[in-house]
Amino acid sequence: MTEIISRFAPSPTGRLHLGHAYSALLAHDYARERGGTFLLRIEDIDPGRARPEHVEGIFEDLRWLGLAWDGEVLFQSRRLHLYAEALDRLKAQGLVYPCFCTRSAIAAEIAASASAPHGPDGPLYPGTCRRLPEAERTRRAASEPHAWRLDVAKASALAGPLYWHDGDTEVLAEPQAAGDVILARKDAPTSYHLAVTVDDAAQRVTDVVRGRDLYPATDIHRLLQSLLAFPTPHYHHHPLLLDAEGRRLAKRTGAPALAELRAGGADPGEIVSALRSGRLPEGCRREEA
Ligand code: GLU
Image (cartoon, rainbow, N blue to C red; front, side, top):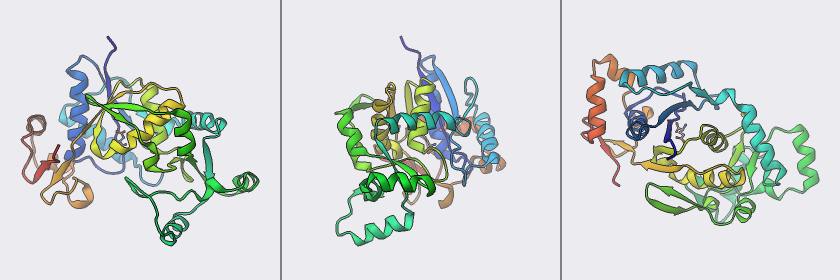
């Protein structure tokens, strides 16, 4: 039997709150209940938002909760060359193109169009740079800052129909719903989608346990796995924790950080057993299944 490997992969852009604790706990228990391995990966590719003090905070909070990870922590910021190699493989297949658009130019183009298609994260990229003539693309790429986008229609046609599992349910991937996603940003030589796909394969993750907010992203990850000849893990998207107003727990809407709960004398054992049994703390509930 294959050894089970799960992971918790937070972005160190703020302190962890109960929503993160829930996700980490589910990923941890999934592996531990099956005699498997639980990994910790720090997704610190966002140069504007990732902070070393939040990395320390993640270590502290997980230790406080008693969630021990196995082996060395993997830092995405130290693996940029591997994401660049994966991108080169997609470049060689003609499946990505440089994008010179600014956010405001994209917004203006969307506003001017009568029927901008929408994906899970809002209006889709209108494909402006996909239509650039080859000569202009090459000339501008030599001097202008650019991101790299996946030509999702071309990539999907090449890959053919793709499926993945969410728990026991087989899901048909529809990566085109997300449009031509960014695989390398102007300010970082990768993006979430590319880095997470490369690392889940490199760490031989068999089971991805993560929040339901990332369910639509899985279609893109499945497509990238096919293009890069990586295995496909099993996915287990869990319901999110919501606050009293029904909003997803978030620091910005007042969810207390675990560090604040700790400072207030909270008992980590009680938090963990409450999260495990579904007896959620006051003012907090689980999204409907
Ligand atoms: N780094 C992502 C986040 O903090 C999670 C990535 C994943 O679990 O795939 O939202």
